[in-house]
Image 1 (cartoon, rainbow, N blue to C red):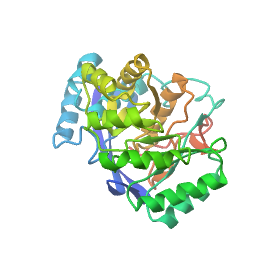
Image 2: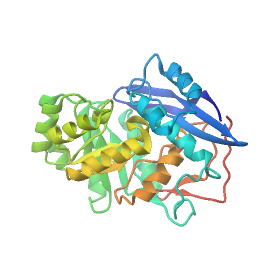
Image 3: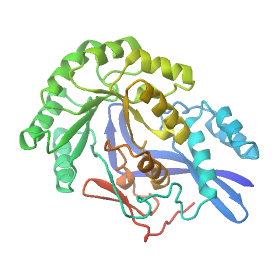
Length: 343
C-alpha cells in the first residue's frame, strides 16, 4: 500500500466575507492511498485561522501518516486525535479505496432517487451585496436561508432580515443567522431578543468560543435556539465533550466533519448530544467537491430531517467536476455524471 499527499489551493469565485475576515483562497490537502491498482482519495479540509489543526507541524503529521499507513486504522485515528481534518481524510481515503466511483455510502441519494434540503448561504458584505444574494437564492427556490452577521453594522443586517420577513412568513421561509462569535456576552441577549421578533430559526455561535459559563447563561435565557459551531473545535476527548454539552446545554450543535474527526468523530458528538436531548445538523467546512461528496453521502444515511449546510460546491473556480448538483434548495447526486479530478 503506497500513500502520498498533495496540497491544493481552491480559488473563490469572489471574495467571501466572514466576521473573521475575507477569504480569497482555501487550502486543502489530499491524501491518496494506492493498493492493487486502485486509488482512494481523502480530503484533509484545513481552514486557516479556525481549524484546531492549523499548526506548523501539519504537513509533518501528513508525512508521518504516509510512513505509518500500514498500522491499524484505530491506532492511526487515535494518534491523529489533535488533527481532526487528517482523521477525516484518512477515513475517507480508506473507504474510497474499497468502492467504485467515490460512492462511499450507497443510498437513494447516490442512486439519484432522493435529494437533501440545504440552506442557502448569504455571505457577509455590504448591504447591497447581501440583498443581491438574498434575491438570487430566493429565485433559486431556497426555503431555508442562513445569513452571516456580525461584520457590518448590526442595524443594517437587522434591516435586511426584517425586509425578508416582511415578504415571507416563517412558515414559508426559514431564516438562520451565523454570528461566528462576533458579539460580546453583555450585548448578545439583547440582540437575540430582537432577532426572535423576526422568528429566526436559530443563531450559530453568538459569542466567541471558550466562554462556557457565559454561553450557558445565554442558552438558558435565549428567546431563540442557539447552535454551537466553533465551540466544538479543539474538544477532542469524550469526557470533555460530555462536559461541554452538560455545562452549556445548547439547543443544537453543528457538525463539520473536517473539524471534529470525520464520520467517527461526528457520530460520537451525535450520540452524546442525543443522550442530552440536543438536536444537530451537518454543514461542510468549505471543502472541495470530494470532501463535500463524502459529507453529503454520510449525512443522507443519518436520516436527519433538519436541512443541512452543504451548498458550498459552487464557490470555487477550480473545484473538481462531480455528480453533485444544487437545485431548488436541495443538493442532489446524478450518477450519470462523471468525476473529473485533476490530482
